[in-house]
Image (cartoon, rainbow, N blue to C red; front, top):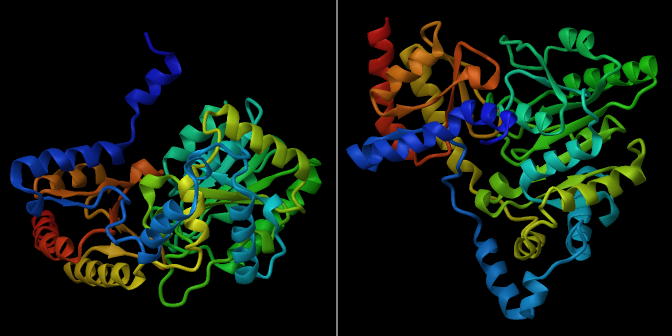
Length: 394
């Protein structure tokens, strides 16, 4: 008999992953070209050519155990040096390898820092709509996820409600910008106000409250939009980064944490995160791809391919009568359901072989998420189905 806590997890398994499996089932029946799977943020754009070249060069240059062996739990020193230098050039920071911990993707990094920070019963605040796995990650360490309700006018964080939800038990705040599922970038004004609230609350409660900035989509920003870098605004900011989207490497599970010197209890944070990396079973981030990404820090995926998809989908859907804020980043569109029950809307869409995810999975009922990291022709072929669907519902 599995654990009671795990039984709950099984029963509430990710709707997104379930939809992904449903897509494979439908493709076997109808043909892949006739199934339009917008459920999973699985990049369709190829990794930059520098990635393949780096893999080949590393395999030729290094001895096998220098590629595949263990290293410091934080990761290779030269890789962390390269990442720190890259961040410093972009944001005028002064990080060193000592501020960087290599992680098994952003998800691994979030689990490492939450394991490091949370006591049972500690509260972690996030803003709806939010990536649903945050609830599971916090629950892993017997924390309590506190959700701030969405501000659907612009999907910026609801700071008035947030201020009231910060308590003496608040240990961390998780934000994601560019946001999954909306594609909204949290503005500099929002970040400044958020930081001001937390500084005041830390003083009021004599506690440390950390912002954990989940940033797998940082490089995917359109129209020259700027994504504020949290350590420039708040001392207790920890950044979790992933190359899954920025280099189209989701299956390689490679990312890093940035823990700034100015963060409260810095030495213990770094030590704790190193130990958490080991005792959670990661031991270290994937060795080959640590070396690969160190050579590809200036490489970029074809952002214009995602932008073409964004333009086609946004203008197509809005011309049919769908309501949606145009995404500023990432590769998701958060669309208002034409009917109140968005789960039913997703069911009706599936009858047209269109797979989308209900907003209730992100703490925001009444909306659906469409992941447009697919082939352009997939969107072209799906649009008639979206049009027919809204016309039938009218």
